[in-house]
Image 1 (cartoon, rainbow, N blue to C red):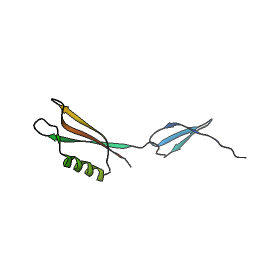
Image 2 (image 1 turned 60 degrees about the horizontal axis):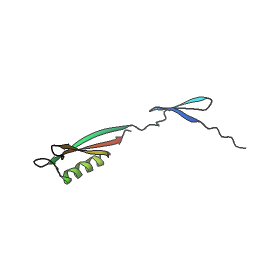
Image 3 (image 1 turned 180 degrees about the vertical axis):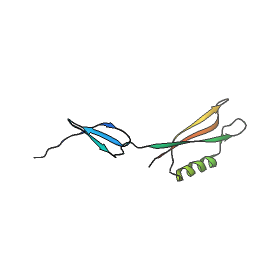
Image 4 (image 1 turned 90 degrees about the vertical axis):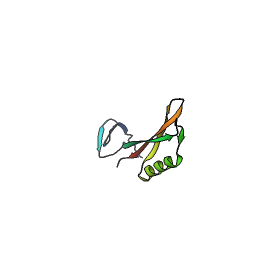
Length: 97
């Protein structure tokens, strides 16, 4: 006959986990939550009233950040005037070790 004790994770922090059923146990040194750092880059749109994005410049920034371990997680265009893009904001993240 096999017995199985089911424990539920009841609380997690960056370096500790508290598990329990009828008895609570603290497990130290368990990194359950991943930690990240973020960086934002701005890519200017060219032209008299904006709206012209230099794709080569954008690719250069994306590739440089990727080579450093950053991952693009969000991008948004900042509109100005008659809806033309003035610049693009790119948000990058990478996991802290």
